[in-house]
Image (cartoon, rainbow, N blue to C red; front, side, top):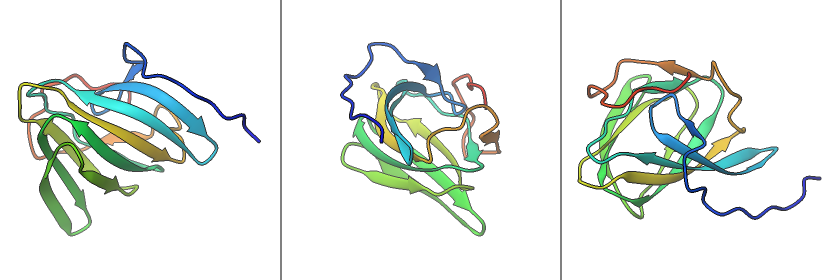
Length: 135
């Protein structure tokens, strides 16, 4: 059994996600991990698709849009504080900040992020403005 843990939000990002957002890793258990994602003001992420993980995001600040596509379904939705979204494995997605403040979400990844090779770059809805991290 893993020990319980308490952690404060790190002052700087631990890593850059494949989509280009800054990631602060919070907690991890065998079934999933929790992280804080931030995209700069007016930033547009790189569109990606995950091979084995599903995610749930809860936006805590900023305003923006999220594009998701799976099989024959695609949509662009408004996101901001109080909005929760799901990204089932295999879903293509991209997001962007549409204001002068960062777009920030906390997210659960299930199972925990396995590392390089998990994300595949895909064509997205918008042209990215941030550099990708390792896929």
